[in-house]
Length: 432
Image 1 (cartoon, rainbow, N blue to C red):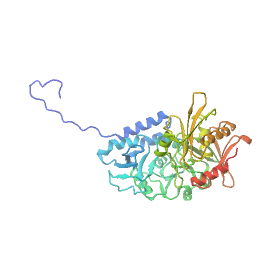
Image 2 (image 1 turned 120 degrees about the vertical axis):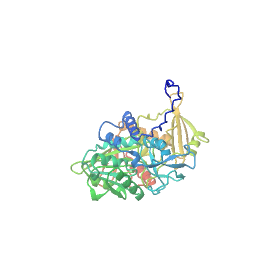
Image 3 (image 1 turned 90 degrees about the horizontal axis):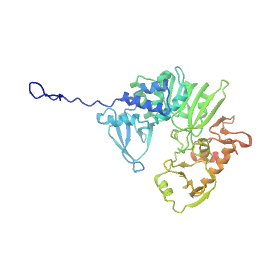
Image 4 (image 1 turned 45 degrees about the vertical axis):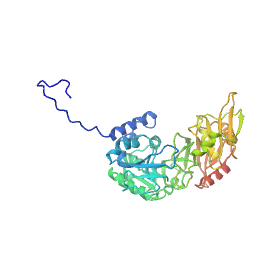
């Protein structure tokens, strides 16, 4: 309305109310990138530019939003659709909040789904990774125009799009074992005018038709470095992947480089986030019923120890614990140290007491507290390593090592993908 009545005394016309501006994906991308820069995941350069340029709503026009509370079962999801105006505000947040974007339920076809459909139970079988982790990995690859790139695990095609944006789509090969994922990625990338080589197949086999590659990276974690990747990596090239025992609690990133003479060497270091375990590798976690049992503590033994576990900042220790004692998961939401072994039901809950020691409550057949102390002894003897050398030996064995001689802390990576067999190999591979 006008600030003052019209001079002729007539009633002023009410101006037409314009519709509120719709969600702005460009502004959301800018905010997402600014947040990643503030967290230290991004710096000025080609990866940052790619994330600003690539419209996520085109790569992921549909995605699931959870409609049940954490730990509420059965889990329910609803499919949001960018083309539906009523979905846009919520879906804009889903796409740019930095968390994983879930795009496929139980291996379903991705193209042609009805907006708003609800899913109950089951699992999400394809998703984009959290953006902090994605940005860190893409930055570390050192992508530049003309590099030949193999992207293992196409998923939502976010990393494939970034690599294509920087290196040129003709230089990029992306592999996924699910034909529905490959089909959808091809469709969505084409909508961006991007046409990399998309392959439906086993990423661990690589893609010999386009080898050698200057960069190889994976959007899922593995128990060991696939031998074909070492063979298909070009001299001077780099491969990145997360190695895992199946536990999400202590992720580690392997960086492999290939020398001009063809020799591959690598390092393995703890990182803040890691990819989920890939196909065929069990992903273990603490169910709510297990966490509730630990909280109740019924029938558990309570003891006091003068020994102190290494602090959370000693990430190299916790990485070693994860591999030397497979099957452990930490409850990251607990106020003190809580670790469980889902396979056998063992657990510990430990906190500082009032006498300079630790009060340890434990139950189950595994002595997790003793495993922590034994690993700490080996880790300290090796010089408190924060990272490990990844060695590729002539017999195909892959070993992680730190220290030297009698003080060396070393173990072999499994030669088989299953979590059970991996645990057996790791136990035999410890070299104190």
